[in-house]
Amino acid sequence: MTEQPSTLYAKLLGQTAAITWQELQPYFARGALLWIEPTQDLIEVAQAVAENDTDKVSGWLSSGLVTKMTDQQAQGVLSRDPQLWAVVVAPWVLVQERMDAPNKR
Image 1: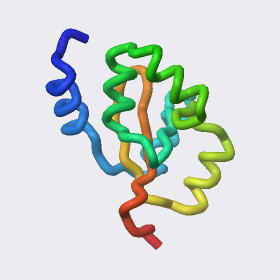
Image 2: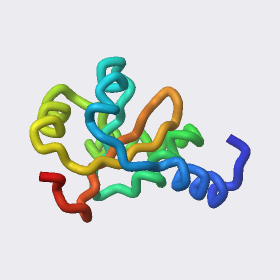
Image 3: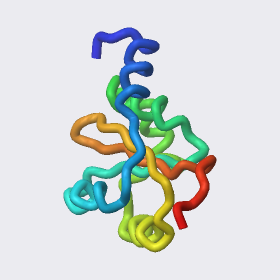
Image 4: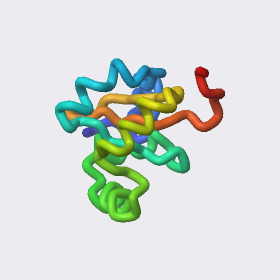
């Protein structure tokens, strides 16, 4: 992408929204969900994916901080029903559990 990093970060931040697991299920079924650990900045990860920053993304993938969402993770999200945030960086949907938000139950 040719946008300045701060502009891209702001754009991605503006496109980030709360989402339910039910809304994410079709993307999970297609294998298009990336799970971002709560310790990571969702927007920073989205920016690195958008900019094809392979060094950063590879590091996160190898350390398990970013993963293609697994069946086990999906079951956990389904059973706990946590608050989730997501942003689209085609073809991926990056999703993260909000740790600062109370559980909906």
